[in-house]
Length: 479
Ligand code: FAD
Ligand code: NAD
Image (cartoon, rainbow, N blue to C red; front, side, top):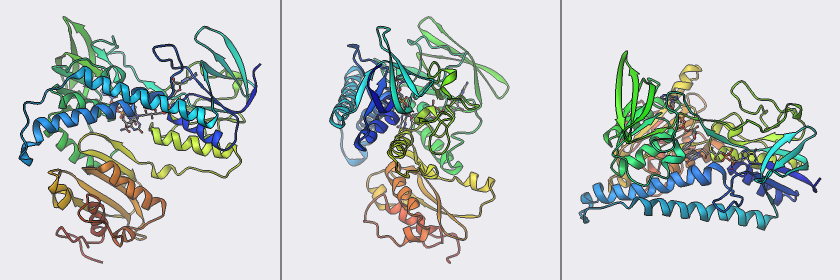
């Protein structure tokens, strides 16, 4: 039996590593168990987010965006460049370097804060202990006053399209292609499909997205989703809704995909097929039945609002528990749990978690959508400002999309903000802060915004809620 820790965390993704750093900062003797190994067999920190998720996908989104800018969009500024070319291995190597830098950074932060990193696969066993099996099969039992399970998630696989990791790949494979596929099929027009479809589409692939649902991005505000679909289709993404894939097989160096749509059968051939149909919690072999942990009906570890499991002193955070599978959601849960273990009265506001799809332009939202408010019978008012009326957006030739602000009909409290347009990720964050402070639309309307900025569109949307917008014709009656 090794030393007893105050906190042992299973998983070093953005939920687990943030919890570990926070716990150590609060003076708790903390260890973090991680099973991921680098190519030299050493512990690799950062989880999905740093290694095969948020960071590498954004690195490729940025590279491909710069390429598309150079190829298609500089002429309007009077700039001409020699035909732009893309060196895919160099682009991937840049992405790998960024990942290496950031995962190494977490190792440095662990060292700095005194977090012990333990390489191996952790399992919660009875009596709030963690059994760790290292890569050579050696087993040790670690005693902990508190355990935080942050084992994350893995891609969902579907029987009609089994991965072969060469032609039929998941998001991880799509981050490491060595050349631009001529024709790229993607099953699932969700967040990953749109982001990775944008990357390879900008680089020259013909992208066809096969989405089972009839509705595009059902969790996004419907008006914003409609506008986003229009913009993305114009960019060349061929998004086919209501398409049910029935079979995918590799034939003569290509993938033949059969799907049904609107009652008829179709076949398409692609050079690569990305399966991006969601992620599921990685809960197998993670705890013994006598550990006290349970799964909910969807396979997530059951927790309450404070991320407490049904076993005393055992917590679970991040993608392994209910809620949106977002890095920042897991990290904030990690901070909350570390603080509660240290005796603080921390809690988390699940109502104001922003979500962003990093297409260009970005799609971002926080709070309630118009369709959800309607369904719940809540009276609301809406202010919309199109980027076409923003001086800054026009100056940048980035004038597609809009800001939509929703406020309560009587109290004027901001209930949601939904944006498709340039800088949407950062703009929506302004509204998240306002919402955290209980702001009304009028509070935002009375705030001074620098000119000329994209954020003026948020200001104008807030003004538009009561018919006071300056730079568009107001359709509604002023109050
Ligand atoms: P993970 O990051 O999955 O980390 C869990 C860790 O636990 C892993 O390192 C795993 O090896 C380890 N582990 C699992 N089981 C054990 C065990 N038994 N013992 C030891 N270690 C174990 N989210 C965003 O917010 N923004 C984005 O832009 C974004 N982009 C994404 C792009 C892609 C392509 C993908 C796939 C995901 C993206 N996400 C994004 C989602 C984000 O990556 C996840 O929500 C986030 O990583 C979840 O954090 P986590 O710590 O809960 O789990
Ligand atoms: P998703 O849930 O966003 O999208 C999956 C899509 O696949 C859905 O539209 C679904 O209807 C469709 N689908 C499911 N089964 C299908 C089938 N058999 N045939 C055709 N379509 C099918 O999931 P994702 O895009 O795989 O991403 C997984 C998770 O990772 C998400 O929960 C997301 O929150 C997270 N993520 C976040 C970001 C970000 O924050 N920018 C980026 C990437 C991933």
